[in-house]
Amino acid sequence: MDRHEFGKDADTVPNSSKGYGPDAATNTPTEDSSVRSADPPPLKRGVWRTVRRHIWDDPDKPEHEKKFLLKLDAYLLSYTCLGYFCKNLDQANINNAYVSGMKEALHMEGSELTYASNVFTAGYVISQLPTVILVSKLRPSYVIPTLEVLWAIFTFTSAAIKTVPQLYAMRFLVGLCEGAFFPCIIYLIASWYKKDERAKRVTLFYSTASLSHMFSGYLQAGVYQGLDGTLGHAGWQWLFIVCGIISLPVGVIGYFFNPDFPETTRAFYLTKDEAAYASRRLVEDGYKPLGAAAWDRKKLFRIVLTWQFWVLSLGYFFVQTSHPNGQPFMALWLKSEGESVYRVNVLPTGQAAVGFVTQVAAGMLSDSPLLRGRRLEALVGLQAGSIIACIILAVWDFPSKGLKYFAMYAAWTSSGAPGIYYSWFPDLMPDDHEMRGFLTAFSNVFSYANNVWWTNQLWKTTYAPRFHAAFVATAVMGVVLILTAFLMQHLQGRDARIRADRKGSEDEDNRPRVSNGPEVRNTETPAIA
Image (cartoon, rainbow, N blue to C red; front, side, top):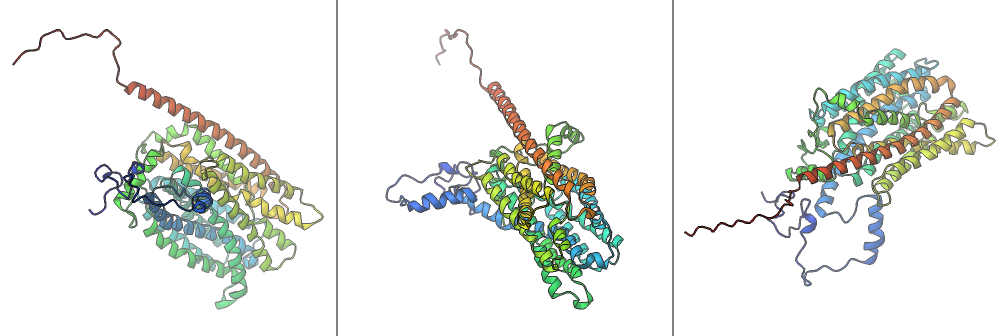
């Protein structure tokens, strides 16, 4: 083998330029002034490197690690972002279709749009827990892309629906296939990236939800103007067709770009040395690998007895209900104001733009040297803007529409809270790989299941466009989420102290014991051969 392994040959290959493994920092070249490189320009060493360190990764990481991360970003992160973009595009397109002619074509009345959303949620929650356990046994590169291909097919089929019950059936099937994607991908990303790399990438992944809402609005506006009536299909039907065309190839790409877990990867773009290095660097960062706490008959009961099971599940319900996305309230308000179909579809895309910028910025800040991997401050910042906006919208009646527009856009700052929230999970459960995956899915299931009654009570279509009670409740849940985040930080600190004390006790037990008694000398005369 021409290349030496990560870390394995560090002792046998002195001064290796590749610097593989944890001891790479010690493989420094011989101090020789004749080959010593010149100092870089002050600007490059100062301002630009500081900017890079705050917005992405530390530029002083070893070259082999930067190359490894570049591969992960190019394949894993790009694929997951595209997949999540398609997932949310196919989830959100019903709202654009509803205000663009589907309501009239299917003769939808009352809260049938809400019921369609609840049917989707039912399918969405059913698939998550079985699938996230399955991918710890069966390769994610088989399971997830297959589900992506299926939901693309069901999205195509949605263009042919003629009745509301048919709409319900298609939404259930799309939700059933889409449900596994989010928790499995969050679990996967957390299994490859370290603490100071994770939040910016998880929020970038999650921000594609905002981009999909933006794109769906532009797409529907373009489809409505350019394809409405083409080949006998209305504009809202073409939206489903185009979304399916976009989603199908991304599902196929997943068979090749999804790397599985570091312990099981067969990704074509990673060597065996890089896969071993991926596992080792996560262990060095304090996380147990896949299989260290494998599933058994009693594991579920052990998980239920932990504080993480209860606090994190409730916490994610607070995350979801503190974001005002139960209805496309801005589009419904614009439609009630008599705005054109084009403006009804395009103006709300500004909400998604606000959500994209704020959550990516929060992820970068959380990973940066300023916060050093802390999630609390970023989470509070995202929620604060949304709480203020929801209070304004709860009041509603203002002489000028300007403040109302501001509040409708500012309410979307909380859309990035899930990315920061789930970036926190590995640090709250560093000793149990499988538990992290399970609680990622369970918290999502718990939230979506409870969102059914939450949406039915507060976000009924008949309450449009004011949704007064919904905005009040959303602001209250934002405050509750902030208090929960402080509790999570307290419990994280307590657990860290317990682990440190336990490790100190183990080190003390393993230390060689030295006798304090008097020294006994051997007085016998050695035999002479």
